Amino acid sequence: MSEDDLAEKLYQQLKGKRFVIVLDDVWDIDGWNLLKHSLPDDCNGSRVLLTSRIQNLSLQIKPNSKPHHLRSLTNKESLELLQKKLFAKEDCPPALSEVVQCIARYCKGLPLAVVLVAGILATTQQDCWEEVTRRLSSTIFVDNKHCMETLEHSYNYLPDYLKPCLLYLGAFQEDRDILVPKLLWLWISEGFVQKTEGKSLEDVADKYLMDLIGRSLVMPTQRRSLGGIKICQIHDLVHEFCVVKAKEENFLQILNVDDLHTFNGPCNPHRLSIYPSTSEGPIKSRLFFPNLRSLLFFNCDYRQQLDGSSLKFLLSKLLRVLDLGETVCPYFPREVLFLVHLRYLRIKGNFGEIPSAIANLSRLWK
Image (cartoon, one colour):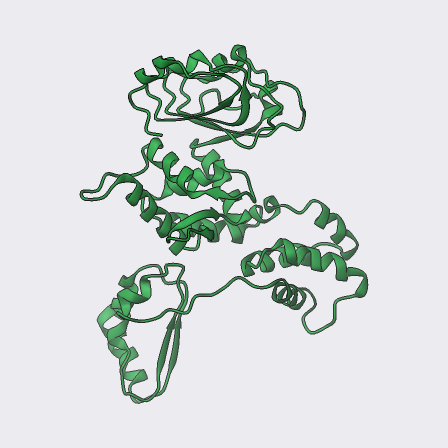
C-alpha cells in the first residue's frame, strides 16, 4: 500500500471507535505530523499517549500542554522491580535478600539499570551473585548490548554541536558533582559553544546544558537561589558510555596518575583527563603529547606535587585548556607562559606572585 492509502485505511479503522494509542520514545515532531491526520477526533474519550526523552516535544505537539515528568525510582521501588524481574511472583530467598537490596541501591533509581542488572543476574548462578555485587560497576552494564544501543540512540539524536559537550562529561570522575560554571567555561574554552547574535557565550553554553538536561542525559542536583543550575551529575551508565565513546572517537583519553609511568596508549591524544593516584609520592612522568589540546587533573591528592621537570614533558604548545586541579605546584611553572593558545588555566600552588608575563597569554578566557 502507498503511504496515503495506508493513512486512509487507518483512519477508517479508527473512525467511530474509542481507542488508546501509545507512541513510545518519540524523538521529533515529524512522525506525529504524519500520523495525526489518521486519528479521527470523535469526542468519545479516545486518547494518544506519547513518551519522549525530550521534555519540550509536547509543547510542539500541543501548545500549553503540561507533560508528566517521570521521577527516579525510590530504593524500595527499585528493589520491587528487581525482585519482579528475578523471581516473578515468588519471594526473594532470604539468603539473597541482602545482596539484592545492595544491587537495587546501586541502580540509583534508573529503571533501565534495574532491568539490565536483572538480565545479568538471571544468567548467573545464585551462589555467584555476591561476587557479582563485589565487582559491580557501570562497566558491567556497558557490556550489555541493549544498554549501549539505548545510549547510542540518545547520542545519535543529539545535534552535532551537543555531541562534544556530552562526551566531555566523561572527563569528570564518576559519581562526582560537576560545578556548572566550571563546565560551561571549559566548553567555551574548548570551542564547543557557537557564537549567537545577541547572546553571550555563557548564555549559549547554559542553553546547551539545559538541552542535555531536557534529554535526560544530565541530572541537575543543586539549583542556585536566584535560579539556574549550580551543580549537576550524570548517571554512571551515561558516564561510562561517554568514556567508551570518547575513546572510540579519539576525543578524550583518561588515565590514572599511576598509569603515567607505564602509559603505552595512543601517542597523540587531543585531550587528556588524569584521575587521582593511589600512592602518595610525587607525580613524575616523562611523557610528552605533542598534539595535546587539553590537560585536566581531577581531585589529585593535595600532598602530591607536580614538579617542573615533569610538567614540561606533559605540556604542548598547542594547549588550550590546562586544569591542574588539586595538584600542588611548588612554584609557578614558567612553561605555562609559553602556551600562547591557552584559553583556560587553573593552577594551585605555594608560589607567591604570578609572573607579570602571564599578561602575554592574550587568549585566556577564564
